[in-house]
Every structure is written in structure tokens, then in C-alpha cells.
Image 1 (cartoon, rainbow, N blue to C red):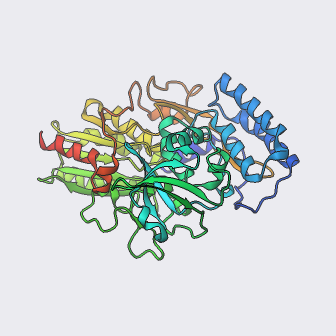
Image 2: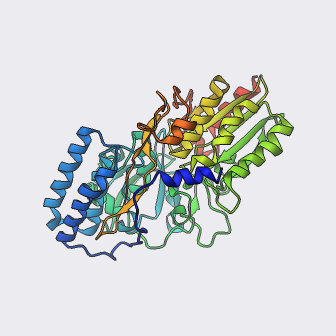
Image 3: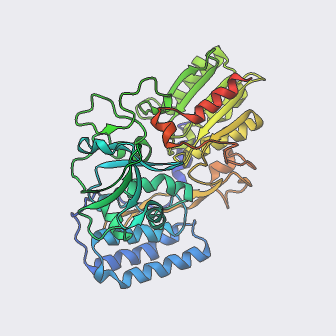
Length: 457
């Protein structure tokens, strides 16, 4: 697949882009005139490249950019970057986004996840270990829900995508100040409820002591890595809620691109975890997935196969096409494929789930939470750098449609026309959300549900 497909993929992009230049909070000093120049570029050069805006959204975008340009005399570089992020998010398309992370400064020394029963702290700097497991009920002057509602305006994509992204921004003081939760980014009051029922308001300051396990520095996203404890030998590692627990389900083990193991009392369930649609080393991902087919599926002929895509935030779905189209046809006639999905499943991760479902039909069942995008979305773009702030802003020019189907390259991304499923739903057929209590006990209810179904057949 690396030959003609690679040539065709390259041929679909006709816009030459400069390399993205790294910046850091405090490095860039922007004058009001420079901010206005960036906003003009955003409106006149970037926006025409993106096709995800509806007519109404484009009108709203243009007005918001104009209003921001009129207020640049009062904006700091950090506030300006957030205004760019908010303007781009008007499209409500997950692939249409502004990467402003370097402008946001230091985070609070805690990491959280939004469970079915609230926002809970799951990882902390060693100095704040006592906060592990606490539920965050208020952030500054806002309830947690109010803070989520305010930060939602800055987050690109569906509500489920925002649910995935929001916890990372709610521990960023610059964002909390922007949305009005706090007046001073130097100290943030958090009202927390501990597992024993005690409630306390603690003031926390941002720290420059980075989390050594923060995967923003690698090729895997921090948003979902907070659920997984770091290796015990990581120097300066932060404390984690699951530290000390043994026999954890495979989801909470170290992330990679492809892992597999046999599960169930009789070992008849093959579990395959695919965390990214790209390889993390020199071996192509398609070769690794093919190795599972040749080395485990064909000789062992497992009756049930679980494909876990809950941590797959995307990559390149050309790497999973053959695997996802072939797999449902390789289980025995009385066998079944279960695909585990969730809010972190995005982009090529969604496409992989959709191709599995499209290829297998009733032999494939989607289990878990709604994914991070719908069955129709825009993607396949690149980042354009704003001239003064150097903020990379991604545009989305190609359409994917798995609900009605893509039949014409004039309307859809050519690879979706050629390979994409048609007329399917990507909503989970069995809904399973994760509660804090189940997580704190080291359980995986979605996988438990699948293993129970397999045991009864």
C-alpha cells in the first residue's frame, strides 16, 4: 500500500505550507497591529481553505473575527491566541482547530478525567497526592458544569469531542482566566469532594515542574494518557490513582500502537488493542496488524475478537484498511467481533471502527461511549501558520460520510469513495460509560460486558 496510494494521497494536497515554528508562552510579543494582521490572514487566507463551516457559521466566524480585530488594543498574546481558537471552533468540526498550547503557560499540578459521575482527579504532582480521587465540584467562581459550558466555546468538534478535550483545559489557569472562572491565574481555587464525603476548597498554583509522563511531548495525546499510570521507573513520576493495583485490565496498561492477548476463561477471546492509526517505530502498522492476522487469527481461529479503539485518536487510516475490511470475514460462522469505542476514538480511529462495522455488518458490534465525531465530518487538511503569532491553524477540505455514503469525489474525499463504508451508524449498539467508582477499583466495564456476552454464547 505504500506505493501508488502514497502518491495519490500526496496528490490531493495542492497548498504549499511552511514548517510550523515552535513558540512558547511569553516568547512572543504581539502588537495590536500584528494581531489584526493575523486576523485578516485568518479570515482572508485560511478560512477559504476550510469547507466545514455552514453558511451561518461562516457568517458568525467573520463577525467574530471582525469583533476581535476591533478589540486587539486590550488583548494579551495569550488572550489573542484563545480568541483565534474560539473563532476557529465556530465550525464545530473536530479537525478544524487552532493549536495554541504553547501560548497557555503552566498547568495546575493535577490531571482529571470526566467520568459518568463527575470530574475526578486521577493524577497529581507528588506534592498534591492527597487530592487523588477527589471530585472537582467548583473551579474558581464556577461550578464544574458552568466551567465546562464556558470552555466548550473554545473547543472544536462535537460535544463528545469537547468532553474528551475539556479536562485538559480546565487545569490551565490562562484558560480559566479567559472564561471568567478566576481573576488571577497565579492561584486557582478548587472545591473538591473526597471519596469519604469531605468537602474542601484548596488554592493551587501552576507549576513549571512538567509531568515527565506527559505524552504531549511524544506522538500520543495527553488527553487519554491520564487514565494510565506511568512506569514506576520514570524519574520524578507523578502519582496516579491506580498506583499499586495489580491485575489491571489491558486498557490501563502501557500504550503502544498494537497489542494483543487471549482473554476469557477458555482463552477463546482474542483482544487486540490499537491505540493509534500509525506505527510508533520503523515497522509499518499494516505489517503489525497483518502479523496478528497471520500469527494468531488464522492458526487459532478465535470465536470472538475484541478490537479496542478507545484510545485511538487517529493517524492514517490507509494503515488499517486491509485489517478492518478483512477481520470480520475471518471469524468462524458462529463468531463475532466486538469493537470498543469511546470519546477519544477520533479521525482515523473512527474510520477504522466504521470500516470494521461496514465490512462485518451484524457480525460486528460497537460497544462503549459515542466516539469523538459523527458519521459525517470534514478532515484531510493541513496546518497554516499565522504570520506573526505563528499559531498553526488547521483547515478541513475533504468530506467523509459513512451514514449516507460517499459516491462522488466531487463531494467527498476520494479514499472514502473508494474504501469507506456506506449507510451505517457509528453509534455504539451497546452503551457502556465509565463511572469513577469502577475506574478507582481498576475495572473496565465495557470489556467486562463483552466477556460476559462471549461467555454466554
